[in-house]
Image (cartoon, rainbow, N blue to C red; front, side, top):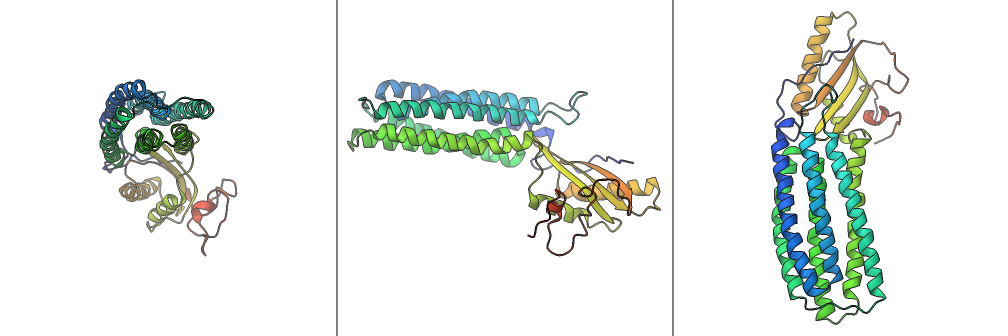
Length: 335
């Protein structure tokens, strides 16, 4: 017998469908900033001939494409559940994030190739004033954007916006690097400073792409919640006096929605109505601590084990200092 109860508590924080418009506004802000910076940096590349500035332009071009992908991703993710997508469309955000990662990686490889070629060439940087001025403007615009993105991420928990946020935070360092490279090359007379900084920018982009890919991959692969979050979940569920045990806990995240399913042991003499009432109370307590999460609870009579040894492990009766969240994965670990 499986009892699924919808959450009675409205989601006041990051989870929920009603944050779609906020995510879209953040994506549109990213597109506006990227479009402005693309025009300014294209002019600066022509004026200076700087490879570091060219790398910055390439990154901004990809930022623009990635922001368009982010807009599409959050738009699709906000579409309500339908007959063919009963768990929603949240993974569209993870797909948009992975698309961004691919673009950033290609940009890093292309810039590294150009930088290595310049190290063995005779190209030099022209007048740096235009490049420095554009980089200063880019830093100002990017600071405003990342502040707004941070606000939106705090409200919605959007993976696509968070990945976009990583890009633009990296852009702050990138633009500072361009300023230093231009100054060293032109006024400091440091040979090949522009190419060396371009290589550093390429490495920075590659590292950022690797980091940004991890959260997206975890969502696409239905990775379990972090250990601390699962421990807190079990602690909240265990407060109900009618609960005799919890087993077969499974968690995952899709876009800005979380899903949890688990089995509980209750008194076998309970009627279906009484058991349903207990499930309602357990879910109400969990929903207060984990708003917007969808719960699927399966009640079993106390002592019944019809799962494999790992799934049948009681996560509330481990004793000692073992982590019940790790035991749920079949890995007893001392914490």
